[in-house]
Image (cartoon, rainbow, N blue to C red; front, top):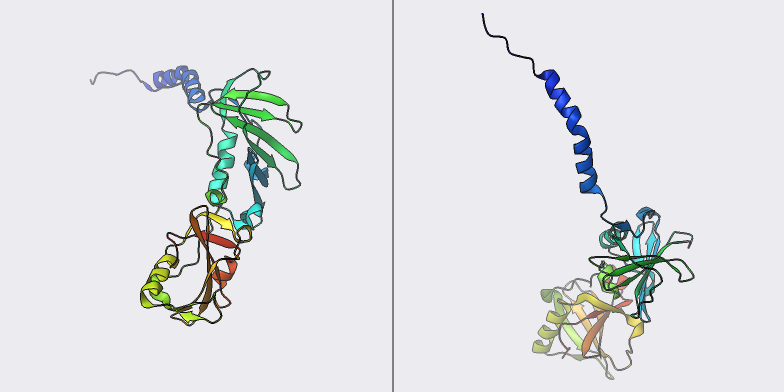
Length: 268
């Protein structure tokens, strides 16, 4: 007769039941925010306006039906993925509580979050190693020591998906200088240089075109190989060159005409 072995099913269930409390404790440890949350009740989807400011500089982001824009930057398209990551990060900022009575000496970087009706959902002030939650009159209601500050740049290109219109070098047929009494054809070498510059325009640190003084701008007219004409203005500011484009024939250039893009080098 074959030996009889004890049935282990009941014992296994008993072990599982006994281990259950330890499993739950382990999961709580893994998923628990280690510290106090700065915005415990913030719903990212409810945020429709974000205001960033520091030492007189500021930037606004606004949620529209078709995505985010930068209304303070001529309605440049917002980088929706990055802005949504910011909102998610704000909901997870946590740290160890600090005394709210202390008065920090450094100017904070302030973030104000509003809903679509303008109601304030939250105000945060960030300093090195510290985050504070405020109410509208400036009173600090919580102050935390945090390990890492969220990335909150104040220049528009950091939050925008704006790109300069594509003008490949080999799409430029001819260029004229138009700043004088009559248009003057540009020589082959300078034409190649300008074509190269136009193909390498950058949206990094773009500016609003109306914020620049174009009175003494270098002015060119560019004919593309498809027959389209593009007017180009180039101006220098703070050791950087910016280019503004306009065209009746190109919809993408018309859409970007409110902006000036950084040129990789001065125009000839």
